[in-house]
Length: 97
Image (cartoon, one colour):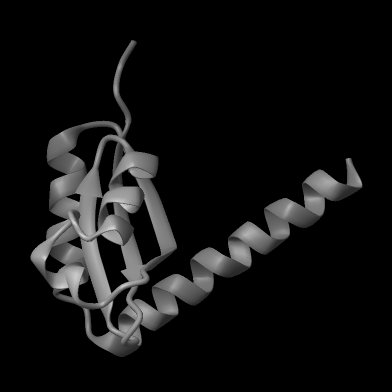
């Protein structure tokens, strides 16, 4: 079975964003909230997943992380808003099916 690769954005307890990549999102999110995910998020808990993007390869996920980290806060907020809107539409479709 092939592992999936994800690029993600977390909203930290202090209102900042943290971007990373992983091949096990559930485990990684738990690690961030347990204080063992990264030095940055350790002091900014709790964290909440606000953006998730799947990539076919590790290199693509890492490249996407690099690009997202270079976005301004305003651009990250727009990315999150677009993602959240898409998730809302998907939820509505599932509820209506």
